[in-house]
Length: 263
Image (cartoon, rainbow, N blue to C red):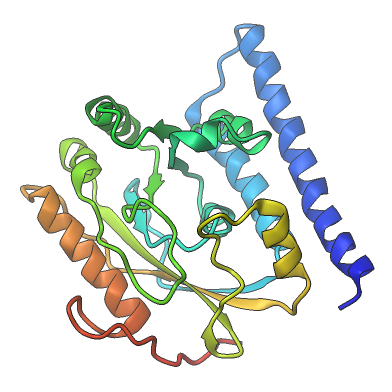
C-alpha cells in the first residue's frame, strides 16, 4: 500500500480526533459557565465520537450476542487501545482507565470529558475508586473495565482481578462479560495488539499499511452479582471470556481455534 494512502487514512483518524476535541471543548466552556452536563449526555456524545473513530479504523467488525437493556459493569479482555472505540461505539458508557491515560495529550482530556474514571496501580486508592464506580453504576450509567489490568497479544488471557468488581456487588448490577478478538486471514492478528513500548503513531502506521483486519465482539451471558464474592465473579467472567476466545477452560493449553469469519 502506498505511503500516501497510509497518510490519508491516518489523516481521517485525526479529523475524527479534531471532532472529539471540539465536542470536549464545548463541555469545557459549559463547565466554566457553570452549566451542568449530565453523565447521560456525556455518554451519548462519547458514543457518537467512538462510533466515528471506530469507523475510521481499518477493521471490519462483527458483533455477536445482544446488547444489555439495563446498566451493567462491562468486563472485557484487553488487546489494544482500539478496544475502547470498538466497544464504546456499541452503547453509551464510561470507562475505567489507568491514571497514566489522564496525562496523555488530547486522549486523556477527551477521556476525562467523557466521564472516565482513573485509577493508579498500587496507590491505595482502590476504595475511593470502588465508591466512585458504585455511585456511577447506582445512577444507571454503564461502565467498562479491563480486569486483566494490561493489554495482551490476543493469544492468551491474563488473570481477571476481582478487587474492583465489588462495585457491581455494592450497586446490585450484573456483569456483562465481553470477548474481543482481532483476526487477519482467519488467524490471530499480530498487528492489532498495542503492547510493550509501542507508540500510537507507529501502531497506526502499522495498521494502515495493511488491509483491513477482522474484529469479533462477543457479548456473553450476563452474570448476576447478588450475594457473590468478587473473586468468584472474576473467575466466572474470565472463564466465560476464555471459552469464547479459545474454546478452553483455564488450566488447559490456550490454543486459539480457527473461527469462521462472519460476512
